[in-house]
Image (cartoon, rainbow, N blue to C red):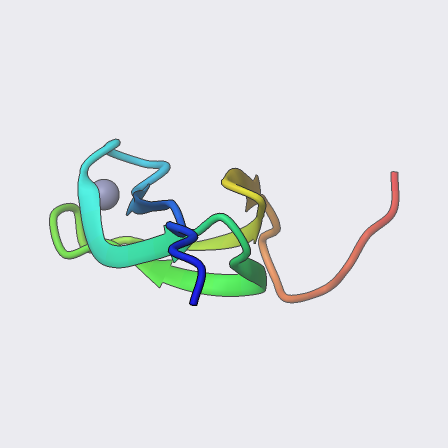
Length: 66
Ligand SMILES: [Zn+2]
């Protein structure tokens, strides 16, 4: 077996920048994931791909193209 180490990092809250209780891996992909932060108790919708976390800012679940 090859000892290929998969990188992990903590998922940070986009609001207060604290660590949440979730970890993502380099191959983790999330789409419209409701990330709940236990610190500021806010929920953020995020996309994650290859450690790139982007916050989805939408008032509703409605998708609006600009
Ligand atoms: Zn937070």
